[in-house]
Length: 368
Image (cartoon, rainbow, N blue to C red; front, top):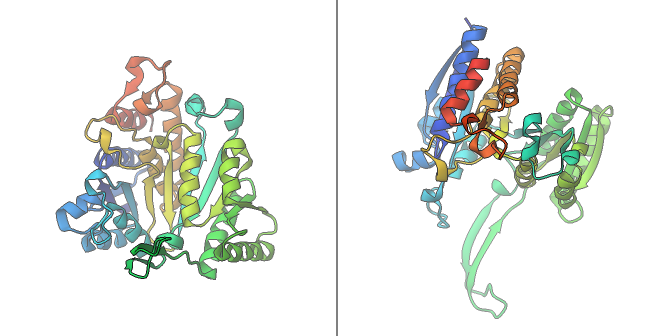
């Protein structure tokens, strides 16, 4: 029997509740396809800060590096919010593990599940046919550049009075741009053959270099893929105006962070969208949503994004395409039958078809 070892990171808020459903789905997949999945839990984020004082303990990183894949739920919450740069924040754990594992590619599929089309705030004719993949560079840019905050005695204010000054450096190297562009072109070849490269080349030197590198790679190795450039502000508008235009969208870290959340809302709920973070070794899979501390412990969180993250893990880390298809089909079947969690229910949803976290996971497992 094939066996895979996974590092599971429940994290904070609703994290422990939804990752439990992801594990349940993995067990069902294992039983159906004859595979043994072993999950080792570890601390990250706020839970790790409370237990160890650090958002990414050394033991967690060691467990992740020794695994075949990492399944993460969510990190963060108001308990750990602070503007004091000397204090740890849960998000530092997420950034840290991405950097340590070399996870430079983030894939966020944005697909409309037909039964949930009415949950989108956009008109049905606008979202018809939406099926796009955002390819976000994950270990460079502002989030990982040099940063400094200090008190400027010479005067930070227009009247010359002293005050604080903060600097964050946006930096990219040529090879970082080339490797993420390659991922986008390869993804496009498996899809509809169209890449939109998003930058701010009318203002930023990093974006000008980005555009040059992307075009050079395209012309040399991927002339069969259609490539166009789009400024990030225009992209934000076009994602709402004509989202079905996009196939693969590739962009730098901060732009990708913002645009992927915008694109996610096209579907009507962040609770439905998964993501994969890939590099040259161990990959990490997580929902696109946050820790939702306001509903933590209530048993009402939507576990489907976590379950769809398991689908991506089966597909990209374990090369189990048939099993991944089975998970996706199970989610579609549950939705087709009218089952909903509260975040994706509407006025037409019968009360007895609104499920909690565990019951929704059970429905998916039954279909698998």
